[in-house]
Length: 239
Image (cartoon, rainbow, N blue to C red):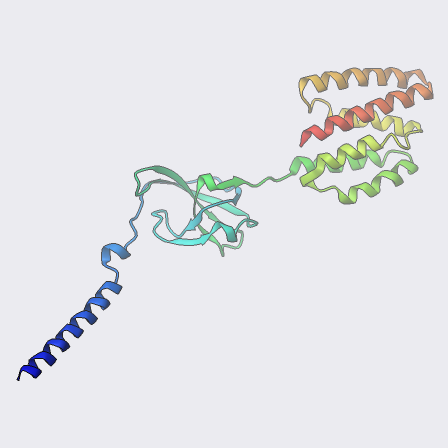
């Protein structure tokens, strides 16, 4: 009889321990539930291109579920569609943008501070095209020398490349067409620099104009040489 009681007590203890282990492995409702942020206001915003450089995309503005990490999207262009003013669970307010890639396969809410406007490089592309056009007005020798340098110029490093091309224009500058190119470069970039550089270039250009009006080839060469070099230095500052 005593042995039966001992066996029964042992069985009950084992069952209790088993249930306790199972219970400890099951998250409570309070533990499993993610606290939601409070959405104060949502508005439509202008579509603009951005890159994300940190944090996460969330599936909703309440920030209860992550869609993906920014580390998978560093080279992805995202477009803004909506803005949400959010009060986070820590009481702090923040602005989140609803963003989407071009195909719509990636979308979600990103903190505005993790988004950076994507550069269009429109001005750089325009400047590359303009400089290329001016070089095509130069002598054939100069064109042969300079046009090959354009293959390595990209919009991202446009002004380093264009600075070199304009400076190197002095190498074969020995015809009227080459001298004239210096003035064309100046006119195109005129006023694009700081006040000191603009004033310096204006003075060099004035001397260049006087030399071009003198019909003295030596003066024309020296003046265009000075203008090419000064412009090349100035263009590098546009980065």
